Length: 238
Image 1 (cartoon, rainbow, N blue to C red):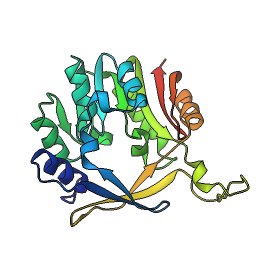
Image 2: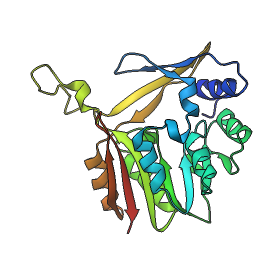
Image 3: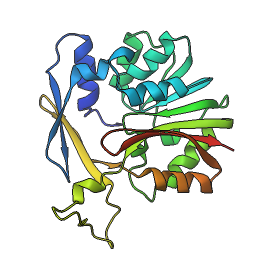
Image 4: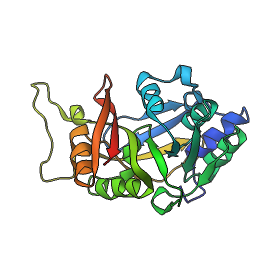
């Protein structure tokens, strides 16, 4: 977030100073409001779900953690002796990661970020493909990942197919075929009295990710299927 309004960053900073409220409220245009318990953002590897442990186990070489947030994944990798760079657009999130001892933290918009060294692995957890925002922007997003990777580098990313949100009782699906892709959502976060701006977020099927990625030189090499139409996909640059 480039503005000073940053509910997520504020919650993360407060947690470290022991002054946090217990949760962040998340509003969307398609679902009921949800809450993110702030302590969950600081889970250790032992507390992470199986899909995240799978993803971390596949991350090798020089690793870029995109949208690193509180730094939970970057910290787990660093504690294992892996070479990880934590990237986030939030100044407060980056300050919080540095406070926790994460060595390589960069505060920048992913789409503006560049690094001459390149990376062996790009990590996109917590529904990291959502950063693309829209289906039309998914290909440019993956192209951006490609530009940051070494030859034979990999993307390890998480998403979900939310088609189930549109299912009727009879099993049919109620979506507008002439409208936007069903996985395009709008979110905003609220923490204490801090109300964030609305932002686009994408949930996309594994088939669509694979098709688009293959068109620009990637091959799907591994896959973890969750219990709620969520998944982690590993794409290798050929």
